[in-house]
Amino acid sequence: MHADMRLSATRRFFTGLTEYAFNARLGVADPPLVDYLAELLVRFVSCDALYPVRSVRGQKLVAVADMLVEAQHREGSAAQKVHRHIGDYTLFWTGVYPEVVNHLRRGSKDAFIDYPKQGKRAYWIASTIPTETEVPTPDVLQRLSEQFDLCVYGLGEVRRQWEQSGDADAPLLLG
Image (cartoon, rainbow, N blue to C red):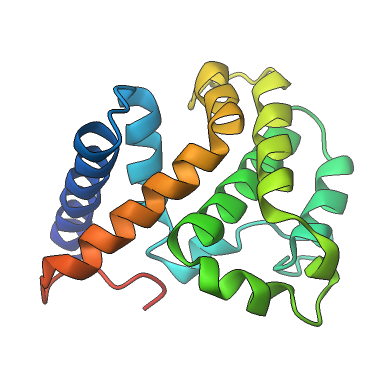
C-alpha cells in the first residue's frame, strides 16, 4: 500500500476508535481533545516519533529524566515542544501500554519518575509557554494536564477496542 494511503487508513482507524472510546464509551464530548489523542496515536505508530528529542550533541533522548533536563535548557517554542512531548510520551505509555512502563523505568534514569505526575506537569508547562503557532492550542494542553487520568483510561479503552477489532490491517504500534 502506498505510504500516503497507509497513513490515511491509519488516521481513519485511530480517529474512529478514539472517537468511539471517548464519545460513546466515556461520554467525553471534546472534539479538539479527542482529535489530539487520535493524532498522538497516528504519530506514535512510527518508532522514530517516540524519540524526537535530541541532546545538544544529537543523541536521541529515551528517558523522561533526560527530556526534563533538556527542556530546562530550551526556551520558547523549543521548550514547549519538549514539554509537550514529555506529556505525549508519558500519556502514550501509561494509557496504551501500561504494562511496559515498569520495564521502561527499570534500571534507567526514570526509575523514580512518576509518569502520570510528570505528564500532567509537562502538559501544564507546555500550555503556559507562548508560541508563534498555537497548535495545539494552550487550552487543549491544559485540558490534557487536568484530564490526564481520564485520557489514560480512554487510551486504554482505545487499545481494548483495537485488540477486539480483529482487523488484520490494523496498524501495529511500534511495528
